[in-house]
Image (cartoon, rainbow over all chains, first blue to last red; front, side, top):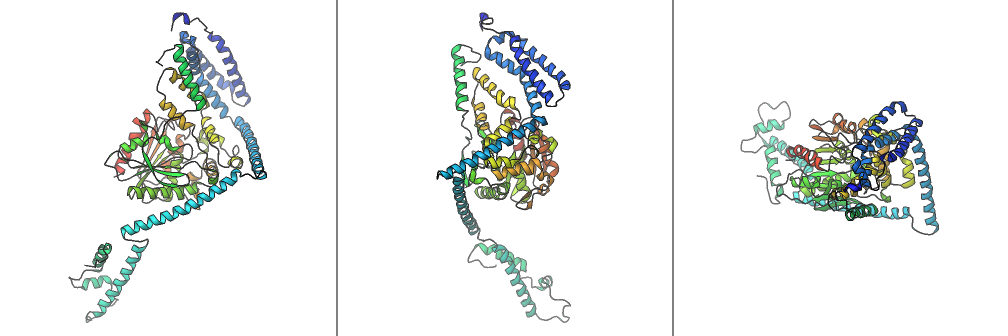
Length: 236
Length: 352
């Protein structure tokens, strides 16, 4: 930056400082009116004021460039402005007042919305809610199509894996019933022992007396499951 | 424009560029990682990000974002994209974009999102990835929905759950400014619904900005002018500003639930939240869970995420607190060196 630019069009930082102090004082006063504790805050605020002033005056050469001056001013004061904003926004009296304002604004908006609907109806024009109703019908139709797509995809998956929903569970049950019947048949076909068993033959008991070459019921079931994927497969 | 050059021509160019940005609004190309739509329902789209490595991990990740703002914050721009990073690390990545609700969607609530949309998205992810299990990754309110899903469907196919800056608990005295403003005596969501139907994007946007008004309304533009004056790259600023100003409305029924059941009554953490009559018990969550919180997060303060550790039933649970804010956790140079590798390192052994 040329040397002669420092004095040309420059401003006195103290002149810039005065309105800032006034604005800060007003914030301080508003905080006090809102019920904050000004005495507790004043010490901290004065410290921040002093720090901001020192920062601004540290490099007076940069203040000749308006943008740099503004940026320095922002850097110096952002902390105190942020704190002031946070103090106000977290003050319950402020929130209560804002809440009332907000509710009034919502009431007005509600009236406006109702009025717009009525005007559209009077002019025989489609209103926002009419368009939404039609869009809702389209969405419902789309969901029906998606349900069909999902059912098709699910059916395709089961075809690919050779099962259908619930088939596996049903097959197992039916196989168990068949095996019980077969076991009962085998038991009745076998020669009777000298001392009849005191309790009905259990599958465990039958499994113990089966000839070794005969596969056990679980083994028979496993072999049937393995051959399930082959239409012409048979139990080994 | 060269750095520090204060000649009238360069200053004027910076001024011109800045004024154009203010007048036209920030515009940037975002969400650039190649993707395809594999499923859609109503406004929601399920994206699959195209792989860049041949060997991929078998457990896919389904990213679930919030119902506030657009989800491309997860894929902000090349070189600053969490999605791009995960894809590069060999994960199969999917993202559920909820879309922009219209007036016809006013009745959509968490019941629909958690009990209808999420399960359908999960089914389609598994079908597309030919997988039996998946990782749910929820960000912000998306994490809240992911946690509710995990509580209601704790078994397979859910393998892992990652919750990033996710509000689960809403203790009245630890919610910050949002908690104060949404108190029942100050805020009735029914008034907004009666006035607007769906909660307007502008209302939600301004509420978020007023949490730090000086930074959001002034500081952002001070940074913009500063970068223009110093001839520094503007793409990150533009991408972030595009996202910040790209808010979406929230369906009326969801807005009512979010304010009443979560902020005002804290039903989820109390175990009293019901979706279609089903009680959502976070203790049912049994899969491995990674919870990430930001120490400087003023939108979802740490107590809201920290409480998750004591509410879930998982044995394998990890809490990670990083020195970042709500969005800074996910994007930027700090995110690249902290959050991203932490997520990868946690997920890798749990995705085989």
